Image 1 (cartoon, rainbow, N blue to C red):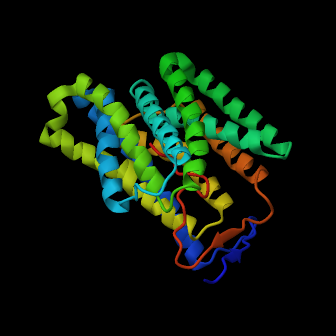
Image 2 (image 1 turned 90 degrees about the horizontal axis):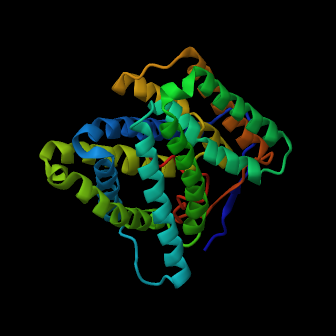
Length: 318
């Protein structure tokens, strides 16, 4: 069996080949899918409640991922299943808390506050002092959100978005552990199944028979496709073409895409200070990624072997 091919791609390279340009398109497509999926979830809230929307998104998403991945259940040890369980609990908590947040505050500010979780993780794991300057820029962005009016945003919703960011950081850690134990996206599919089982009783109690209405099921299927199947597939393909640092920088555009989705789908208007705050947090996220990245972004690709979904910074899994 041939050894892995080592690909050293300079992070500061100004020219992208056709494959990398395609990878950029895949990442942006996945980000659009995730954030517009969150907007679809907000449309579901009046019909199912927040818990019902979470149940549909995770339940249908898990069924689709399990059908597509068909993960092997045998041959895994106790530590593997503990990792999947932790990953599933992180997914359940992250989605439940985030959906509670966007039920109270606009989508753009919610994602801006949520992204502080992964940003803090990136700063804490970086070995360069410059990363802390980017953390300060992110705090300046949060302060600007406050100038725009945390009362307008609803303090509870802002707190929930920050809590969802903490769960997102936990998701990243769990994703890396599961990705090293399961091939392809098998670990993610199993973790989604765990998350679906955890949230199912809450959704059934809160929404009851409303979950089975054809229109609701249709929206729920669309939500699962937009928030799970499509973005995970696109980002897996993108990770085969892009350096991980480039991937992470592109994922930092999430707050801006979320604000666009909130404006187009939910008619959510933002104050100029809030737009500036989102821009500062995006800049801080990009800077923190670059501060924590080496001069080159090597990727090892073994011909015929699938790339693990958690082998690089994971997608924004709303």
